[in-house]
Image (cartoon, rainbow, N blue to C red):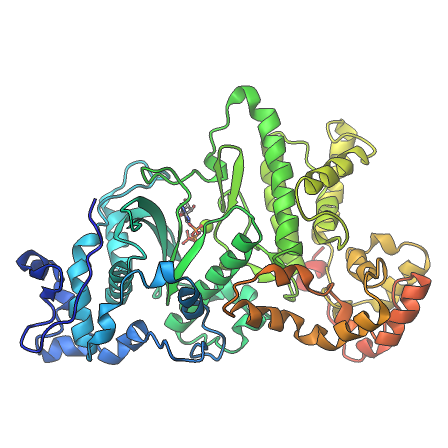
Amino acid sequence: MEPVTSAGTAGPHEPPHVYTQNNGYDASVQQEIPRTLATVHPDPLHAAEVDDDDFDDIFDDGDDDDGLGPDGEPDLARNYNRQNPLHSNQQKPAANTFNSVDDQISALSKHAAKIRLDDVKDSQTKDKDKADRATSEQVLDQRTRMILYQMINRGVVSEVHGAISTGKEANVYGAVAYEDDLTKIQRAVKVYKTAILSFKDRERYITGEHRFKAGADKGNNRKMVKLWAEKEFRNLRRIHAAGIACPEPIQLKLHVLVMGFLGDRRGWAYPRLRDANIPADEAEQIWRSLYVQLLGIMRRLYQVCKLVHADLSEYNILYHDKQLYVIDVSQSVEHDHPRSLEFLRMDIKNTGDFFRRQGVDTLADRVVFDFIIAPGGAVEEPGLKESIEQLYTSRTESATDEKAVAELEVDNEVFRQQYIPQTLEQVYDIEKDAERIGHGEGDKLVYRNLLADQVVLPKTTDSQASEGDQSDEDATLDSEDDSEDDSGDESKFSKGPPRGKRFEDKDEKKVSAEMNIIPKISLAHLNSPLHPPPFLLSA
Ligand SMILES: Nc1ncnc2c1ncn2[C@@H]1O[C@H](COP(=O)(O)OP(=O)(O)OP(=O)(O)O)[C@@H](O)[C@H]1O
Ligand SMILES: [Mg+2]
């Protein structure tokens, strides 16, 4: 166990890279400086490789700034770190007292020995081969190392160990931090790969995401990865604040995210749900209760956090002691993202398929979908579990019956092929849908709840409703902006307006509320030809 060391200000006659206040001159530390970091020696070749400007974003702490990042969006990392002094300023950052970036790099390099990537704890790959280790080394480029040194300097982490996971887009490392009383706490550090991230795959999550509007610069990988990491951090904050089991977001710097470690004290991460070791004698009961737990989590995510995970599967859920933990939320989208419902349906399919393979009598995808998006009803336990049990009891047949299983499969297939409009503008055949509503078949529309929530259960008075109308357009943005303020209060997410409200004419809404009917769809929306999406055409 090694306490955190604090770097001090170097005297004018002393080379700053070898002197530290507590340790004085330390030859061993000097030896630890990687060759690539030894920028204090003038070397034209090397200077070209290490551009000082390149490190500005690492060393720019901007304590007196306006809290906005370079993209004009609130810089949540900065603000969050500021509001969490425990995490950010355990020690006064010595780097700030130096003038040049070179000096800062040199001063921080004394922490090099604290990054020990050969200490691998990857439970998913039993035999770590050399190739994997090489990958871990590669991802820690100079910039990443500097960020980690800076975090070590501040006590966010004290040591960084080997990879828990090495993936296509990010590596996750185990780390430890020491509290004031030197209690050891495990942490996880997710490092996004700035060179490799393929934005083609990510395009569908970014397009339509207002949080990416200002900052997205698809030509600039580093900037995109930073935004991506910010998105994960911000989503984690929301999810954690909502009391959903997930890693605690601790600190973010550029593409490096520090979070709480989900695992045991010795540094072994909890298994992914797919690798969970469920005792055979209790398997049936445990798998079913985990399924019910997950449906509750998905509803809470949607209703309280206003998020859809968008990559939910047995790979992005960790399991320990009958508890599920949601991870990997960088691609999660706002519930008003143009494709959020499509992503939700995909999450329902992937998780439902997995639980079915474990022998769980699952609910139909459509039923789960309606359960998650229904505006009224419980969003807390035990109410969530009770609502799910009600869904089971209200089913006509049990899905264990052969015919019912076949019907469920057909229903799931139909549901998965259906086009889900997110807004009235996206309803591509309004006349046909209006006709169905006229024939009393409105409940067959996949978006019926989205329409219904505009007219059913009007909880607000008329005057409240009109206030809501005015702010609807900005509601999500507002909640985003507010989330960056110092209060850290995330409860506002539970008060968001129901989806679709903003698309409804105020007078229409009043009339429809009185008559308790689905609002008339304005023909103005038909002015521009709307094309059904490709997957509907191929259906
Ligand atoms: N907070 C954590 N505590 C413990 N283990 C974690 C934590 N976060 C991630 N892991 C481990 O790291 C693995 C990868 O994490 P994650 O799913 O967030 O990365 P990823 O984005 O999927 O990376 P890639 O797509 O490149 O594989 C997880 O499956 C889990 O085993
Ligand atoms: Mg993952």
